[in-house]
Length: 320
Ligand SMILES: [Zn+2]
Image 1 (cartoon, rainbow, N blue to C red):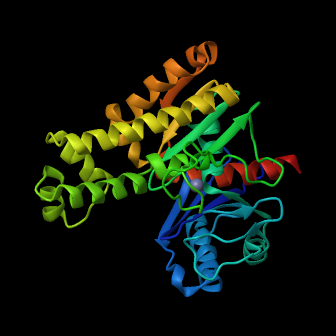
Image 2 (image 1 turned 60 degrees about the vertical axis):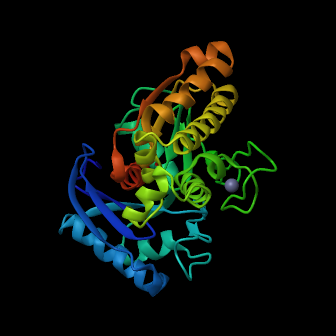
């Protein structure tokens, strides 16, 4: 990565797992380490684990810098993790400085969706584009914006919260405390909640039967029920697809991106979810931007945030 024979670490701090990658000058991953976060131990112990993980991934290779991908709200300019919902006890932790001190190299933080967007743009599905939007569809809905080839942070470093664009102001309550965000209408969490309602309303239905066998009610079960002919399950996924379509329409109308990259596990719901959403966007967004935008699947999978964090650190180092 740097041309002096040194390496860059990318550390992805998640609520349940810490993933560290060691990248060489050609962006090749030459070492990796995956371990439990055990977040209930609090910030000090988790930071020790992050350092140990980065060193294990490096395997004795000399590091030049470290990039850290963090969940939830953070202040990348100051290197501070503010209040991540999945990390109990964390409040305004100066993570970049603490990791930098312990590893003895410069370190920077970036939120996980932004880091993933950077990785998809530099190394994945978005290679060669100038204007790319990443939308990640999972338990929640996240996003990252690349404009003119650069990650867009906004004035406070908080840009790209695509899951919290409000579509139905008096709609269902969102995890962010407001009502009717895209995430509250079309995420894995929203679909799981809808599935539980269906089970309650139709205790003899296909979904209720599958739920009794599975013991757990989530979006995946909703899909199985739809495949088995449950009309309510089918309608619930279709509704989420329509809402996602409204979200994509807004993205296309506001940003006029060259490409929308779709990531996250929920995209596996396929035609009746992402397919429906794409058709809505193609017919409802302004004609020229809708005709021009390419919608593609993310290529980098679960390692995208760690890769993006390493790329970000490398770009900071070469900027000097
Ligand atoms: Zn929200």
